[in-house]
Structure formats: C-alpha cells, structure tokens
Amino acid sequence: MLYRRLGQNVEVRKLGVTYGKVEAVRDVSFAITPGEFITLLGPSGCGKTTVLKMIAGLIPDHRGMIAFGGERIDHLPPNRRNIGLVFQNYSLFPHMTVSENIGYGLRMRRWPADSQAARIREMLALVRLEGLGARKPDQLSGGQQQRVALARALAFQPDLLLLDEPLSNLDAGLREGVRTDLRGIQRRTGQTTILVTHDQEEAMVMSDRIVLMNAGRIEQIDTPEQLYSMPATEFAARFTGAGNILYGVYLRDGEADRICIDGLEAPMSVSTRASTVGPPGSPAAACIRPEQIVVRARNDVATLEAFWPHALMTTGQVIDLAFCGGTAILHLDVPGLGLLKCARPAMEVEGLRFSDHVAVAILDCHLLPRGE
Ligand SMILES: Nc1ncnc2c1ncn2[C@@H]1O[C@H](COP(=O)(O)OP(=O)(O)OP(=O)(O)O)[C@@H](O)[C@H]1O
Ligand SMILES: [Mg+2]
Image (cartoon, rainbow, N blue to C red; front, top):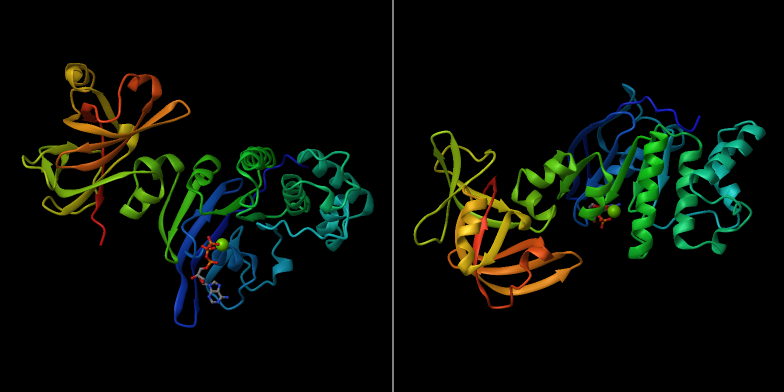
C-alpha cells in the first residue's frame, strides 16, 4: 500500500486572484505528472502560498481551473479535494497523541479501525518515530513534530501533498536532515508533491522541477539543472545562484553566438550556448556562474590558454579570498568588467593571496535578454 505510485495528473491553468487593487497572482499554469516533486520558488510576497491555498481550496473566489486526473476539482470544498497539507508551524493538535494526530485524517474518512491502526504503525515507521506514538506533540523536538505533521498529511493517501515552507522553523543542521528524510519518503511513496520555499538551495536539491515565481507570475519552469545552467531571464539568473551579470550587445558570428561586453576598451566577445535575445545587435546580458571563471598566478597564463583555448582571457586582481569548506570564493577586480565572483576548488588556488594580480579565464556564459 505504501509503495504504490499514485496515478493522478495535476493541472492548474490560469490561476489568479486580486486583493483590492493588488493582483497577488496572475496567469499561473503548470502540470504535474504522478509521483513528481515540484517546488514553487520565489522571493517573499511573490504569491507562492496564495497558489498553494487556491489548490487546497482555501481561497474560494479565484480565477482559473484546477484538475486532478483530468477532472476539475476547483468547485469542491477543501475537505473533498483529498489533499495533504503541511505548514511551516507544524499545527499538530496539542491535546492528541502522535498516533491520534497521524490517524486524524483516517478517522475523518471513516477507515475501519484495524486499517487505521495498521496505517498509523506504517506511518510511524516511515517517518522513523516508532515507539513515540503515545507522546504528545510538546514532548517532541521540532524535527520530530515536523515528521508527525508529514505522516499525518500522507496517512490517508492524498492525491497531492502540499508543503508550505515546512523546514524553515528548523535550525540549519536539522533542516538538512529533515530535507533528506522528506525527499526519501517522497521517493519511496511516489507521492505527488508541491513544496513552497524561498530558499533556492532547498529547491535545487529537492525538486524534479522548479516553478520560479516573481511578482505573482511564473518566470520559468525547468529542472534544477536547466534553471541553473540556462536561466531565461536576469531575475532567474540572479535568484538561482550567485551569478555575474554583464551587459553588452548580442552578435552573430557565422554559426556562433557572441556578446560584445560594454565598458571594455577593446570590445571582446564571449561564446555562448543559446540565445533568446532577439536579432543580432539587440542589447543583451551575459550570466557567468562563479565556477565558470578560472584564475592562475599572472605568470601562469600559458597553462590557462593550453587548458581552455576557447575561453575569454583577461587579467585581474584578487580583492577578496575566502574558504568555504573545500571551495574558495574569490572576488576579482577585472578592468573593464568590474567585480567578478569566482568559485574554485580550494586546492586549485593554493598559494594565491589577497591583492595578487592574476590571469583570468572565463570558460562559458549564458546569454539573457537585457532586463528593464
Ligand atoms: N488575504 C489577503 N489579503 C490581501 N493581500 C494578500 C492576502 N493574502 C496575500 N496577500 C498579498 O498577496 C501577495 C502574495 O502573498 P503570499 O502569501 O502568497 O506570498 P509568498 O510568496 O507566500 O511569500 P512568503 O515567502 O513571504 O511566504 C503579497 O503581496 C501579500 O501581501
Ligand atoms: Mg508564503
């Protein structure tokens, strides 16, 4: 029972809601396949919780449609949508034991008593809380309470699990543990899930696909890998990781896409992977991820050129150097380009010091349409 794949496609189309004069959400459309883990990612106030509430039936007067398995459910009240919900603040029933909390949805749905007991045992094992069924919520740690909330939401086999910032009340160490647990449980149960978070790292490590939101609408829908390597907009590039954004003009050189970067005395071109910026001559931006920049001591340019013959070569000065585990984060002052952030394996930059003049190679960049 626990390991079946749930077989419902979920589709939302043109969801929207306006509060007073504020259009909190507009034209939000996406589809989820059975067993998929989707994350709504975006800054505070962009409408993530509002979308989740519409799907759960908690905002009656919204625009658009919601369908499970091809059938519209947007006219149904919340308790008839078969959705499991977990919020940031656990919201367990304090007067009920852990087992009673987990069994709540089963009692509401009138499962037979022996099936309820078996399902509660199964859920306690799933979230690794065997033996704690008789405790009250206030006798559990935050991480344990959050796992009870998850077990309660999963117990009645919802068509869809909705998680709104479920990890943000946990401290950093615990958060990583519960994150891994949550993803493991989701994979084992094949539970179709929508997570809401404003934490891009959480979204990246947990999701099959990310729905990136900005000011009430969808900015981009993609896998974490695609979102990181091919952000569609400047907003997507900035929100999905520390990027270096440089401005210039898009050029077409035979078969190759290039960008002429502003502010360089002798204009330079950088080869790119894709272009959605309009015809050659259009203003464009280049997103250069920190790991696409390599540095060496100034007298070591030949090694850079030999290793990366197609890279853009320049020079700069180290103005900040910090070690973060096995990764070194460097800030480079590159004449013409300004400040660039670079991330290298710590071993590779051993010997480099603050204020050193260095040779810099930009390996790759991604073209973006220029933001407003
Ligand atoms: N009931 C309401 N009445 C009026 N405005 C609302 C209401 N609910 C939400 N809003 C507004 O709608 C916008 C989206 O809110 P929402 O709670 O969906 O954001 P969010 O992306 O979940 O943000 P956060 O990451 O801070 O939780 C915000 O500008 C918010 O102020
Ligand atoms: Mg929210």
